[in-house]
Length: 310
Image (cartoon, helix red, strand yellow):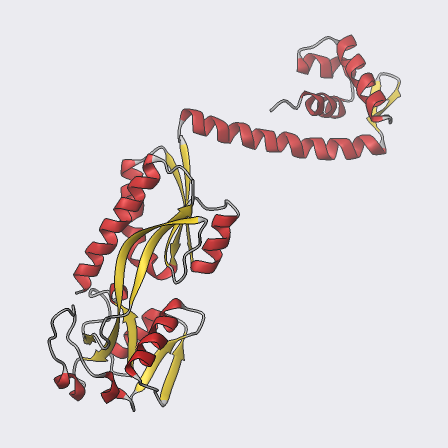
């Protein structure tokens, strides 16, 4: 990135003297004087007033120098970043991850990436699906990890986990005695119609879990009379854990190490309703070794966490 013109004008503006500016720029005084004159002729306006041996900025010159300094600052930032790529970090990887999955995955994945790919600059962003989809379209992300309800033709989707929508009840609820072990189900099966009159804790409509929950309710022909809406999935899990109501979760969201020791988890529909957790990137994009390894690492981690939750 060559900004010789801007450097010459700014240096002359700072010194106010053509001889001093030429020394700083390592060129001859006549060459610099000719360069400034030719530039002014091209622009069709004077940048400097010549007052004796002094060069004083005109109004046009002040505007030029203001913008030129911004350009030189950007060049300095570019040169620094380029040097970092050449001499240090040789890749930038911009990754988005679903907020709730980040709770489980980020503490595992980030240290692993630092160890395995120390020269990769990892930019890590936590969002829900809609913002990450837009950022991928705008080339502001290289890939993201999220549950996806609909699949776009211009995106590639790598399935990492099929996560069952489960029904959560406090372990001491008397209706838990009606659960049965059924072939083909990971969790004990229970008739959700028995809980028709219970307080159902549901997340807001904007969250994908709500759509899955509504799908399960419809499949079971259950229409709760007492619904309590919440924004945070973990808050809902905690409330079920203390017996405040019943609710739904993806099995992989339930962390056995925190606020879930009193939960009983059930399947309530056959076949189970599942959500697929994907790695998503633009179709045709070449994935680097670090990006491919990251996808494999996330797949391993999310499946280990899921089996731990069982």
